Image (cartoon, rainbow, N blue to C red; front, side):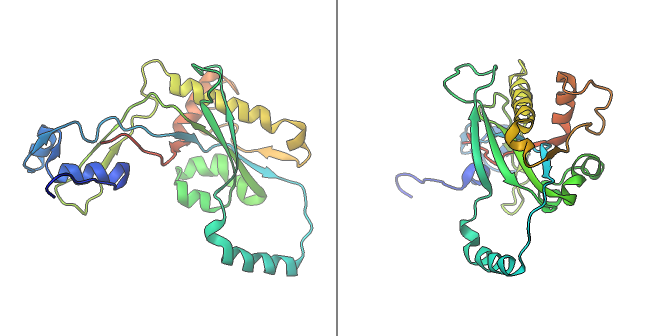
Length: 245
């Protein structure tokens, strides 16, 4: 290219392409045997939305079942699968940690859950059995809080000079020195817990299944220490990585 090249391969592969091409942190490229062309902080300032996946619940009210309607729904589902949303509803709240009450710092997803949760999110087996396996016994839903404005900063590095090797991610979740990320997400989790106790959810006999987190039993229920411990077990990427180039 004589003038410019625009790389649009996402927050993961764009920095990978640049570094493999010699554009990136000089020492890192040297270590992998890549000739540096420009010494630039490519792969730095990795931000991501953190989500807490422990808010699994089941609806215990019974519903009528009609086999013909079920078969028709299956046909419609197969036909319209690309248009079916993963998230069925959103809510936005500004917690007490928000710097500006006019702007939300937590997004809440209402999602339908199923046993595939285990295979998609891959929690530790003992954690899954202790906290989330109950969702297989009812009609499961999740009210999933997501941190909208993370302060923690991670980075991305090449695994090797082989373009077919996936890059290495170091997200550094909850590493901000003032613990704003952790406090904000805990506030979001408490809001979800209060929401689940409202009359609207009581009408469908909503049951909460993330209490008594494995390994967190020593902490008082609903204390900051308990939620901080639970975050370490059941928080994960919101798959919204950004700012690496």
